[in-house]
Image (cartoon, rainbow, N blue to C red; front, side, top):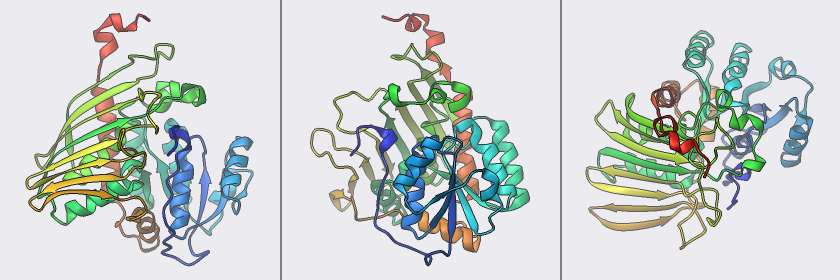
Length: 366
């Protein structure tokens, strides 16, 4: 497991749902390393990675080193004009993701973007309009559920009724900052969107999915910069409380405060409480016990259970997404769900109490 989240690329077992060359994709906007996980997941599901484009030649060289069969092009237009490309994957700067996606949609292709898919509500509303107009997909890489075997298995258990009706979800999403390896845009709020908009999006998406909510209300949210005052626009802490439209509730906390001694980049955990049982997912590490991830603990009427899931579940989202693009179905994720998770993280960010402003002493470097 990598200690640096920027180099973490989940890998599963190849499980192609299409024949070689049947579903061609391209990668554009290599600003976040999530693009590697996005493309790897699609390739394992049978996609053929044909083209890559980014204005930064070094990023393109690094990408080709990881995916030797891909070829570089000199412009975005070359990709948009290639009728064989069915889907374009992108991990551009967050504030640029929607504008790029709209170009892709209008070119008649489906779009798969890193989270967070938007940094403003205006971007969301414009993209909704273009999706309705083009009938193309604007899918989002909510990797902390889609690309974690423990999280995938939790969804299967819930669907099978293992813990009854889900009534509460608590999520913890700490990340290691590694400030020296981060690009400039990472520290500019108008470009990354704020911590609840950014890594908070994972938590809200999981709540909607596990609790079966179509909508939710932000009851309370707050953000702060506790320990990185040299980056005044960075928020290194955020939390929020939500109430779903079916009565389920959520509390989550995200931060950039992972201590150096942790063996991985973040101790991500999810607790799911149902009317007949409970689940805990230890996603990336079992602290001081196992350096492996994907541990799931289940307690219900049948007893206490511990599952070690690495290499045992896979990542069905990617194959489902490919088939959705071919058949125009919504098995992997509905468009409404992808947009609702994005909307709620934007609302949480908008409403958040700024703890630094409420407590001016926090802005004084100790």
